[in-house]
Image (tube, rainbow, N blue to C red; front, top):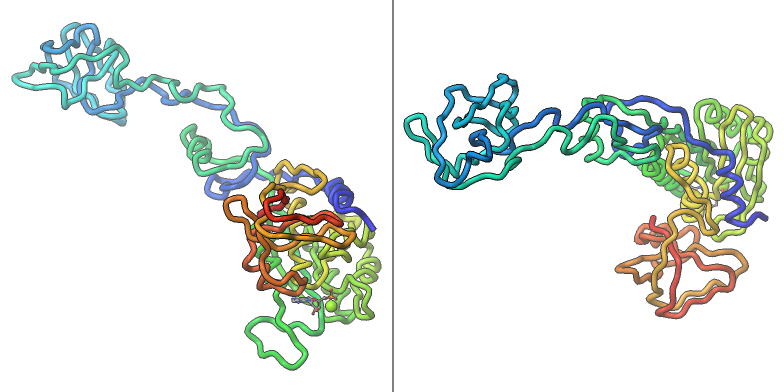
Length: 396
Ligand code: AMP
Ligand code: MG
């Protein structure tokens, strides 16, 4: 049985950022840049006024000064190529290009206008109320680096440079295949012995949250049907995530069916609780295959530990493959917790202000406790934690 960190390491070994596509800014939110972006133009592109007021020479613009008002007005949106001569002021508006010869703008609130003359109540310093060309960004400057996430503000920055598209890594397509004779889709009536398929919508949502595109199909525990369903999934997707049927039960056909379809099992079974029967394999065409245990909590935990990091790396995110995996945080236990077993145990927890407590029944079918949880608490084998002691967790 593999250790958790070894399992993650072996999976990530087969994973590198996906193919690069160029997308318009509207589709790039939260995506990862695949190459650095350099500034194309100075921003602002020209010296301009930051106020509605009067363009002046600062050396002449002291309190009480009287300046001749030029008849032509300089509005925003076009450069009239005006020149300011000694003793003059030119009416100017926010964002308008500064006339040649002017080096400051007096706010209109600080001026009295009468008979073609303005009288200043306040003086201005050189550069006052002027936004200099290149004052924010210079052409040639590195704006964003490879691996950086495109936030709304960064998309705004790119737009301000006139850049309409960016190179990112394509979202992988993930096919989820749930298995089991006992499963019924929500909305249909439940007959005796049946349960609803909760893994399908849960895993599809987890795939979407991780940043990939998810689709789902279901196969009953019949080798023929399973082969058909898995074969279609392998042909269509970058990643195939099978839930259920990977254990040692008589009707657990997933492993042998994957083998028949040419998938090489890299490993089966990981020392982790819940989720021991986790399987990882590869199809010769490059598709990665994950077999998750069917119990919803086990499926969720193993998806979080072993599949989400793969999606993140395919999208171009940095993924550290440290011992407890990416995204591990430290908090303080609000209650006693213990793991008497010989596998790391991921307990469902609630973290508030750094204090961590347990969330409901800790059994691998108990999805209510998982639904209340906002973190998975990791207890090492034989670890017990007293209230007030540190404990590690990851947010979910
Ligand atoms: P398996 O891994 O197929 O042995 O399933 C383990 C347990 O998880 C069984 O009790 C199944 O009924 C349950 N289970 C399997 N798949 C799902 C699913 N998609 N939704 C809810 N429960 C499931
Ligand atoms: Mg089953």
